[in-house]
Image (tube, rainbow, N blue to C red):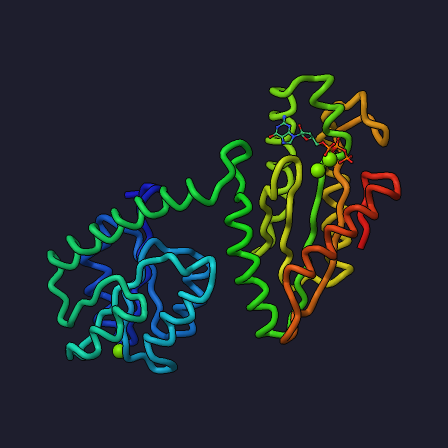
Length: 301
Ligand code: GH3
Ligand code: MG
Ligand code: MG
Ligand code: MG
């Protein structure tokens, strides 16, 4: 029977096929179960598939389950996935360690399936509620893209990650051109619609894994482009400018084009010890003002 699309996905991680089979059989009626038999594969699959829950063995051939947990908790895309340790090591000490590190629950082998199913269902219910709350506090109510609060958190994470890996981070600020005129002439409600369309377009174009777009405030947006050098950042913004011209929201009262446009200011940094991330953001903002002064509807980098 074809599975329902809305079926929650569970990632089962265990190096013994027999255990994976037992879990698969016990859960496949209610969930889509994906499987990994090494820590490395577990991390890859978690990033690719974003499962709703992970059942994680502690003893794995290539790394411990604790290491897998740490890695998942460190990544913004996987950090909120509940992880349940499943292990033969049933000492209280291990259980406490797992829970302290952020595991949601702890099962000992052999798994008692009815109990496991009930506890998994509880965790998923909790996750669903948490997701709902998080989406409310992190999303902008008008445009339905992440808000500034969400950006602040993400910026900290991406900055840290870029620093750790010595990789560039593209930071881009954008601001709608002549938006006061737009509101004055078309009305605030139409202005709101334009904001929604622009935000939707930015989010659509920024679709490379890790790209992040938020409404920074008013008619201003901010974008994070991890591992994006100057050429890639320029290419990205060029694509946005082209897409905006195709979107072609009429703006008769703009002094730089016949449609709604944005000006962009970007910097690319490889964060190092002692560097201030807020200074980098301010530098992007200064570039934005340079783009405005230079005629708008363009990028300054
Ligand atoms: P510039 O090209 O220099 O950016 O000029 P501008 O007119 O876009 O800039 P200004 O800062 O003078 O005006 C920003 C306008 O954006 C004024 C404000 O009413 C409008 N705005 C900010 N937030 C919202 C919103 O949520 N909805 C609507 N409709 N308008 C908004
Ligand atoms: Mg094992
Ligand atoms: Mg502005
Ligand atoms: Mg503006």
